Image (cartoon, rainbow, N blue to C red; front, side):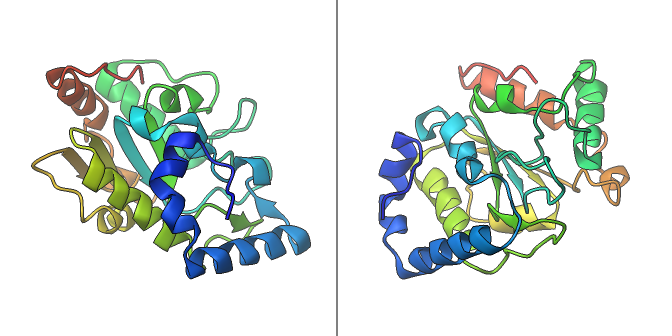
Length: 220
């Protein structure tokens, strides 16, 4: 099956695209886009991969679902396009960066600049119905994104994994903490940020690790 995705990822994931579950997933997604309001836009489903090629990944941040409000989801977890109001979790991410690194909260919520520096902003589920959180879970996306994490874990080391919340931590359980930096904390959601996301220091810890490995730091 021909999937429009960045070339280095296409090479890594080509076998996955041929598996029966993936064929069923794509049929489901196409039917949903034809009959429902679904986010993100079709061209943005694989944008996390397009903006951050496999060979350039330095940091992996795992989200769960795309945002399900109009105009919010843009294919990168936690990110919104310029001009869109910051969702609460993103507000808290920027607050922690300010606490950790002293950087002012930016004027917009687009995280494209992170992706272009090697931050893979991967949701576990890549599509969602409008206003229906979790509506495309257990349709095959999780199997696909598990394969993405597996490919990274088996073919690359010295990566930073930022795992916020139990869902992300379970998803990346296969990652070897001896060969990578695995950072865990509660999720930045308002429901849990005060239980340990604030003060986790993940952004400075990530840059310290990347510097030690001789890899360029991320300008958060």
